[in-house]
Length: 176
Image (tube, rainbow, N blue to C red; front, side, top):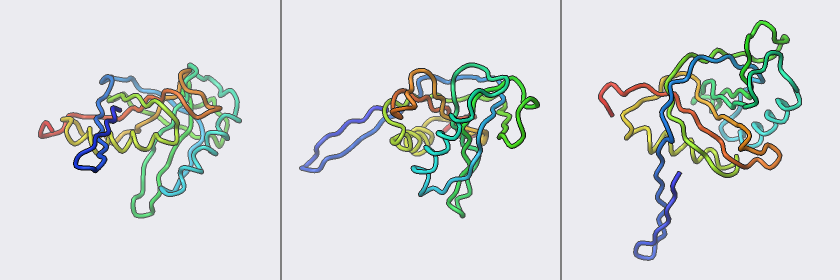
């Protein structure tokens, strides 16, 4: 996300411009991990705890690759809550122990954005995608899981680095 600060008539104005790095057709994937419901207001504290618990799980049966995923599974605006999954891609769901969260993510087109910095500021990237980029993009959300991809460019000990944000998209019916 490009952030420019300018001063106009003695008032500081912060302008952002966000564009995806790429549009990707991603095949289906199977994810396993922890699924929890968070309050909008308390997520800043409860999601880091969920990531700690996920790391403590250790190796998952049939894990594919080394990336970890933070997945938005749905929201309840009336209750001010959303479900979030911390997980990893796996080869099959049937080999997983009971109680572990499972998710089938369908093949989908995604707009992929890069967040550089601390995970505590990730909400600003999501906000810019939904409120700035999406309305002018010619796309709409696909109503499938959207996720954050954490790979070797992210340091879980410091909470900083590069995080890819994958927003599921479809062409807007009116073209934008």
